[in-house]
Length: 285
Image (cartoon, rainbow, N blue to C red; front, side, top):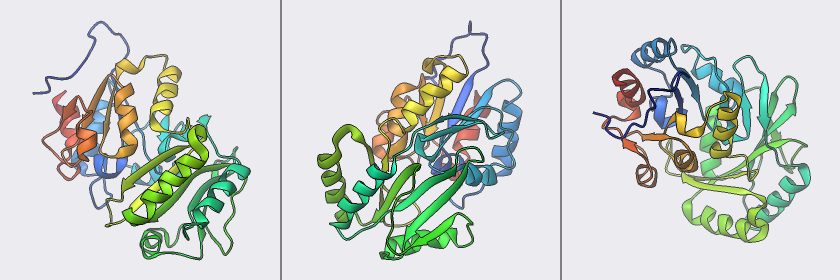
């Protein structure tokens, strides 16, 4: 059934699988089905499984409390790699001067970002800074974070010392010229990800360290595991998965993935995230 799978039967290392969360492993209601949990936990007996997500450490553990996790996790689009026991493997941040310069350029377009930052590198305590000047899309996103203790309202938003990512939410018409302007201004100093926001009709523009993406993080995880990228199978659905797909030995897109993601995938599943596509693949393997 899975004719595109590239496996090396002579490799003594357990197979390695790394999956995106939202709209890939998680269902659209942001849950893990009992079927997926059962398959995942069974698979960890003879394989290494982990995640590569835009979500934070605490949020990821909250979603994955049903699952056995042993391997390093790629978090916040690739800016952090952390073990389930909170050992920091790698971090890529934007310093305060860089981040404040980005904010100043965005202000010319009358839009201000959310900032996900690290308050303490030892405890991995995060801050979620958000502007008090918000558009309708940003208001909608914040509804999902009502009781999040990381939240800090900022009348005049400025970065702190260790900024993991800046995220702009808005319409495609607003964010496209902003993305072009930022890339023209900062060039290769930054990584830029413009993508539709699947929980609404809006878009988001994520600004990262140039090596703070999933592809670079995947390479670091495989070095940590003393394996090569050709030995890993990855799963995803969105723009921030594309470069990771190009690095991995086998890339698998769920059926609800964006067309540009399917175009670079080795395998396109007949199942969506709501049909437990990743778990069905793992079970069939």
